[in-house]
Length: 287
Image (cartoon, rainbow, N blue to C red; front, side):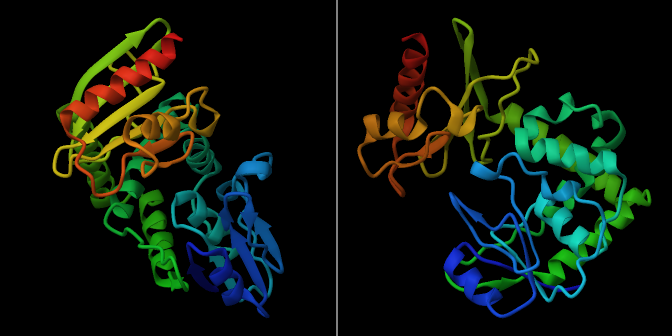
């Protein structure tokens, strides 16, 4: 396998690839993309019309020395493994992975491949939840070993490994339990819905309501730190700006972007802050 490196800095990643036969996979930083000398796989922003990297056919890129990433997730891993000629599994699984990457985990069950491949997807996520990669803001991190391990885990999952599949079921059950434990209320305003959570497990993607309807927004309160996060299902295409809402309520030190934002870092906003965010979001839905 080629060397696999990741960085949160496009400058650092570019420097690490310079002079080498390289491929980049989702090496995207807003509108900036780091190009590979042999191949560039990117599909966000202005490149959203491109194929999702994990759906690329399993075809070795001859001569590749290094593959550069901006982050590590299933989509990026699938792209990396395809470039290295090692991508395992059926096309349906990767189509489901691509659907989740583009539309969010709350839309997974809407895909036609969900019934056939959700157990495999759960098993992968159970493994990956124990292999979190801290992407450096400066310099690069070699993740070749993690990519190799991910490949072997996927091969075992597709081979029907009973232990990994059981761990996937446990992970999925735990995720559902965490959502249920943190849930406070679903608020429906006209044809819009806001979900409200409080807990320690970050729930910004819990958009699907008990009724099956997909909510427009999630407001999440961290019961340990008092921090608040606001996210919109439409992401940066949301008609309401998350960062504008948070800065209106808590000042310019609140940060984020249109699709997801939080209060000032390290500031305990309290339950009254949670009430204010929910009120502001619902009011903007009515206007």
